[in-house]
Length: 526
Image (cartoon, rainbow, N blue to C red; front, side, top):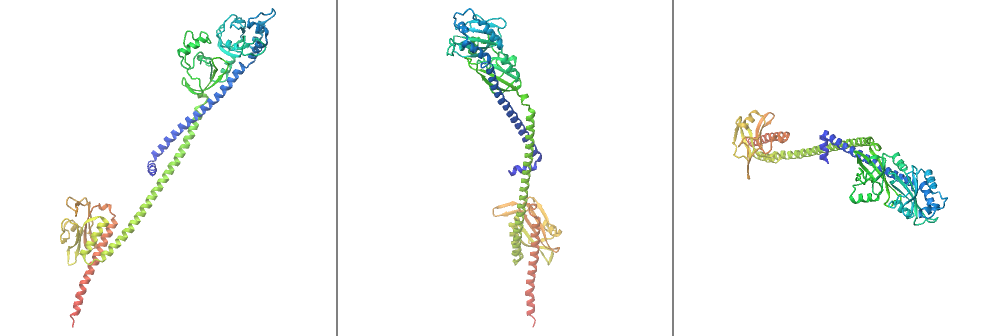
């Protein structure tokens, strides 16, 4: 988590680009979900409207006044009963007048009586195209009438060739309902009632037969199309039924560009919502299907979803800004903790160094000779600075131009007992009284020797030992680390401590030498 915080804190542009990309994705997803949710709402409303419209169609057809009138005729009219059953009629029977009265009252195109043998006995037609003599035994409405059931049947008229609805009521032998009929009273109307329902409230609507053929549609090019791919068996059954006249005698039906089911579909590049409901007309083949369609580009405009997407993007940007602010704050806190820890470690190391330095100072003060002091110091700097080789020369008050060897450690060759000012790098350092650091010394210079072998020094430190601008010695150290990697103040402090220790020890040694001489002189006086 901290690596992420650090990365985004150090790369602000990348962080904002990431937030912008996430906001764009959130906007697209939110807009898409909103659009689909509103589409599903439209589909749900279409399903409700389809059920309501199917009930409306059945109420105006199967349960309408026209069906009630012909049902009553088949139940109580004696002349019609005799006509259907083939009995003798009285001379004053006016069946045609009765049929015309019913047709004229309810706007039927024709009314006729089908006999028990399936032949039309008497017919009335509004434009004088009677159906008398037609054999309609193949019509499902005849079969339903013989079963004593009312039905509404949609088909293409045999006499006129147009689409029509056939309202059929059974004719009973007695004035009571029975499970069988002796014929039927049939009223034929056009599809104006159905077309009115399909055309008045929907973008597209259609009525499909139980075989899946579009019998009525607000979109005229779809008339006669079929739901799904028509195979040979299905096509043969449709032709045998003769429900659609000569429509499919010379051609095969064209598949409908939509599937008659609830949901959303794309037609000719437009997205539609579909609602489907059944229309039960007591058709022996099964219920008819009412399909309502709504153009979703109009019913569900994308502009509203774009507003939702914009709001989601703004919210995502705000949350992204808060997230980045939180990450930056977390990173700043981590950096502060690291700085605090580094400072604490530095203070702890400094305290440890001061303690170690105090210990070194005490051990140097306890030394009784310059050789011992040199060995103690070189041992300590090995542990503190990683100095694996060293040489210490101290000044000789009796010979100002010469320095005497006080001690050495791990030298490849034993150093000379004396060092003249200006002789070599170390003598030059003593002469000029300037420290010198040599990084990556040349081959053979500063080679460190140990029991396990030898290695090249990473750097060589040459430093004069000065006390109040007086030269008291010179120090050479071979380090396994670069001098730049070591704290400079610690180096200077150690060199200063060594210089003071050398000066103090030298004075103490001089005092010790003077004291016996003074005592000897005092003893010789009489």
